[in-house]
Length: 421
Ligand SMILES: [Mg+2]
Image (cartoon, rainbow, N blue to C red; front, side):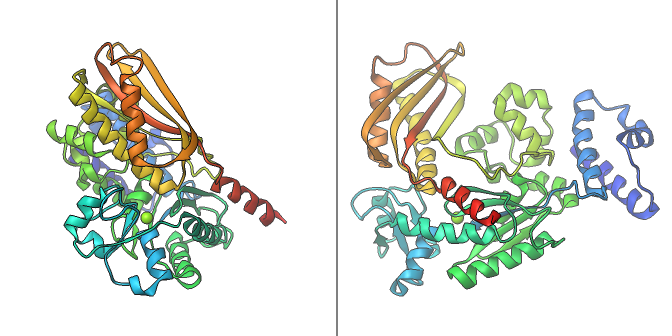
């Protein structure tokens, strides 16, 4: 079926290109390809609809087809340390933690070659890479450099959505330099970052957020990748499930067990089946795999909490399996906390039982924290107080809220204000 959809897609493309004729409405496509559609189920027809819709946008003369760039700094914290201290250049370094305790917040590429990565326990990191150099994080410095980078983005567009200190989406469909080519803009931005900040960034360019973000990962470090509209479906087909941004390790493993290894496998599933299996996330998977991710680049996203959660394929009850599941969620949460550089005062444990009732348990501290050990300790306390779970659970989540005031979004708003004048 997938072959058929992409075959139709290419037939459509060729027809438009070689006949020089533009089919203007969806009905035109329908009329011309009715013979193929007749044998399709309504679900597959829907799937095809998405492809055609994407195709329409591509051929539209008004640029309804968006140009999205995702910029991601290479090993950001570690690169800042290497830049500020030339003695560290070319050496395996870990920012955060020490040889004995703590977690790695970021690793240089030299350290990554040894299997050292962020959120890894530093004792394990030290074992994997015996000559690893531990450097104390300097979040104020990272924030300072981050705002320099964000400022560069704003030379091109105000539609900038930071995801963390070192990563942002830019919508450059209409941009301040009036450039048509998003590739050109990405090249200029990377050069400007190199010249003014002295660091390298990788860029991904495409027509939606998901593809742009995936593209920026393809050629790291110091790379630039483009996924053109006509490449989107074939690209999604061959993409390994664990490379899908938004599909975590646990979900990827679950999917592998169900025989889903690539986007093509995912495309075989009906939309309703994806929703039945993965809930709300299933809808999102459907949209991204059909290259129909319409999420806008939102410049004013203000973060109130940082969270991670997981829905399980089978309900959990045993304490050991619940704790194991929470440990995985805790790991994801810590990665997110580290990448935002934020601290918080309240930890919340969310529990959804097999009967879909939801309970939350929270605990607040008198100080801000981003300590992995302390957060884990609080999660365990919440799990057992007031009492251990009374019935099987289908979802668990952990969130850190009441975040500290170092609000980079507020800084950005201030910046945009000054730009208006
Ligand atoms: Mg990065």
